[in-house]
Image (cartoon, rainbow, N blue to C red; front, side, top):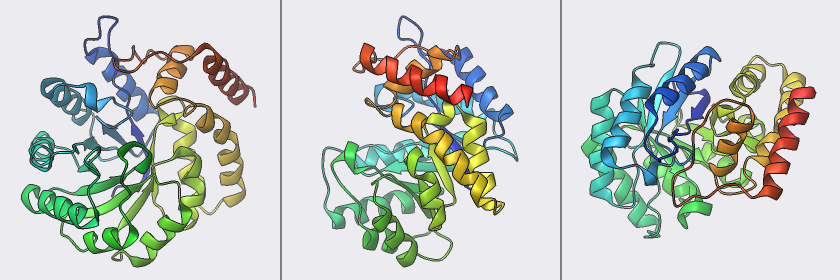
Length: 291
């Protein structure tokens, strides 16, 4: 089952901007050893728009090679072109992923009827489990709860990664969607609040740096140890805040470097974290380690 802490993997690049598969393998191995529930390859955190088709497939294949009964694998397959999304989703299925994460089409800004038709067509033609990804701050479009509720009755559309930042919207989705439809937090800082209304986990950026703690947050909550879950949430919150101080994954890649975890360089068009914000990331990580 898709649940728990699913790490949205960074994609390591060499200084010449080529894909660094060996470092990617090390990063995935570290996630597996940290006992996260799952990993997501080629999401926003993985700089998917900057990957060509060959690189995208290589990253997904590498992730799938680590799949086990204890760790599921998802792949980001969404684009702003419906046919391209179908092609990518079929490719991901053929490579052996457990589910595809399909973002709402960006830049096009489809209306709700367009979103319905887009996701229904992808689900019908691909025949693999799909999780909708709603992140209005990056796409310019918000998929509304009523739209999600209708899509929840489509075969193969099993859940949503909700990153609107609205607990009201998430609550309406949980109330209106088909029973069994899953909701995962798309914002690290809101993981515990969203689990309190029925979310089953998080697709996490900061777990690249702190995987054990993000998985522990999920396990504490579902074990009924609420006071300890709140402590962990408060412990993680400053890190979650600082690692989104600039566009993701710029801060988390800097964090990986600072922690000597070798996240590789960024790929254009993303640039390095500002000096001011580097200091903020360092401060949050130093405080995290000493608490």
